Image 1: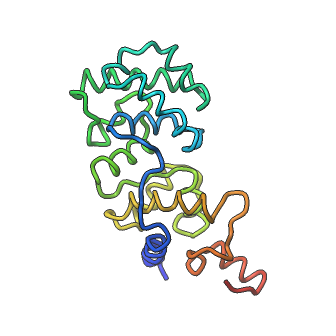
Image 2: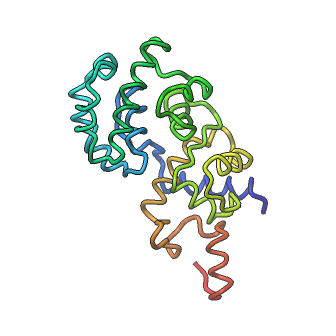
Length: 220
């Protein structure tokens, strides 16, 4: 079985387990999603979702964020870690959206990468969730780890290399939803500390599990 076929089998299994491929970060506006993703760097989505309701209530428009006192934003996002960098990027990013993009999150990788605090992972998530752009591959820690175990990548820990390798095997129209489902699977079953291979629907196509079988002679 080649990796394209393996990817298709994994995609179908994930669809069965997680029918609703939704982003775990809560937001109602395009710039709110951009902000939530920035806060999620080196932080859990759960923590971000605890912080953003008060943050979005205090600064209830793009204009409010653009004119915000960075120190106040720092105080509100302190628990997300790296709060000084994140607060600065949030205010600068909102100013950039107003000044250069008419108050709208742009819909191209090239333009998104010009926004302070937006890297390829954030840009791919925004393109996939806001605009349903095919081929949007979000390589977060869950995706990198699990796709390496599955054998869909060569095990690289480099997000850019992981993205390139997944683009080669994932159907473009499935990429964004695949990445959301992989995150859900990484939290529920294939955890970093102790993957639950015995109850994993992806085990039949998993290179890591095949190795365990070969070593132990055990089945699912």
